[in-house]
Amino acid sequence: MENITVNQMKSDSNAKLFEALSKAQMEITGAAKTKKNPHFKSDYADLNSTWEACREPLSQNGLTVLQTMEQMGEKFILVTTLGHTSGEWIKSVLPLINTKADMQGLGSA
Picture (tube, helix red, strand yellow):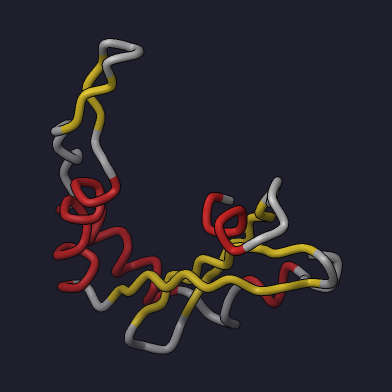
């Protein structure tokens, strides 16, 4: 992440993206808690339920979510990009902590 600057984290303009995101957020409902965690005796929303709660409102407002992984030297980062049909975009990066130096470890990270 040493080489990424704030300007590289977003398009020059984001007015249309933020307008669309605002509309989508008005339509997004809470994800259904369909899974149980017996250890904590609690219900939780899994990734599928979370995605289903927001997929349609995002799509209907011209928004897309893209996740890629990049390598920076010895480190891997997860890059999440929120894009709009106008071409506007914003991204975030998250360093991945790989405790096992193989593909299984990378997938777990």
